[in-house]
Length: 113
Ligand SMILES: [Zn+2]
Image (cartoon, rainbow, N blue to C red):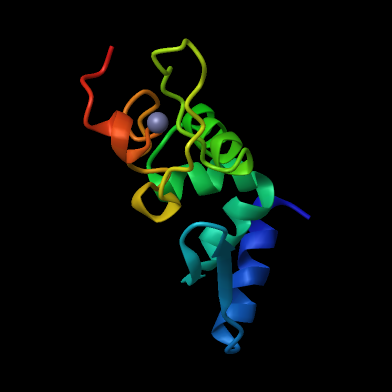
């Protein structure tokens, strides 16, 4: 089946009343078009990156940070990683900036080094 045939099939399903939705682990569930559904099937990570308007690399880095429990990545005065838990809900892939948003309240108020 060609890409055009796949898209036409998804469009036919959509026209018949079948809707597509996408469940993002950070954004919840939302409706997507047949074009979006096809794009998601072809490359789910690239699709998510496009939704969040970030690069695949940035999204991967964010996902790894979340998978590690959203630790503060600042270095303490003793030279160790802080590892206080950062408020997960204050950070999304869209506004995740390593060195800035992956900091706990104590280290967020410090100047970036
Ligand atoms: Zn910290």
